Length: 304
Image 1 (cartoon, rainbow, N blue to C red):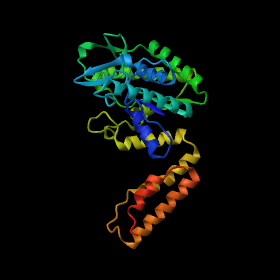
Image 2: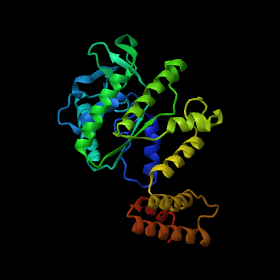
Image 3: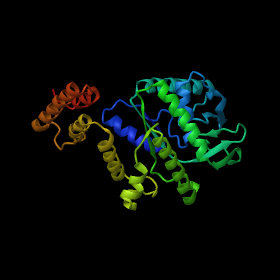
Image 4: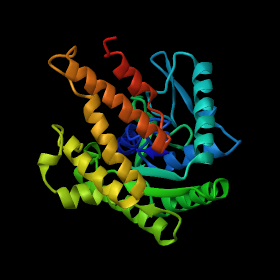
């Protein structure tokens, strides 16, 4: 399972596309460590109070603890959605061998009416919040408690921490640097006491790639080339040799699936399609993966 900032989406999506069994950012993009930990604890606990953190804005109900995409015109429907997400996440954490947590920022927005740090302000007027740089000691205590509870819940679960390479420029360049530093020290402390491991996605982007040609037009988010580079480092560091062997074969299949012929009815292309189906079925048998969707896509192109 992956959870956290948009980099958790990138790694999670690539694992999913590589046929790994993975739940990707079930609560949407979550940036600060306190909100990430609250959601993880809420998922494994039977005592949940997320219904206390709902707000209606412009006729839509939102949850302060979730991303804005998880919203509804109906309050009860939103509560059902939250409950289902927490239950799904609980099941995933029971079965998972690896949890990837990507931390985006140490800047938090505290709701004045409750004193709670929220995951998302949902474009509600800024006068309702206090912006603050979350103290390292607070983040450490909260993260330590969360990791201890996760270990008790699933002793086989390994936690891999990362700091998102995406800069939070809206907080100013200076505060972004301080924020990332706090997150990096937090991760270091968690790995020092052996509660988690660390993958240096942030360092690879900032210190290894180290060139603006690896950033998108917004000069903030990594390009696909940069994502490919970081993904390759992740694969080499953490995936088994069997998985890496599979990825080499799967990449050939993916290229075949994306092939667009000039003459789809030709004997050569029809033979190519049949061979690709055979390869998919072979991979399915050898690696116990589900290739039904890919096989259906190719079958629809066959001319009987």
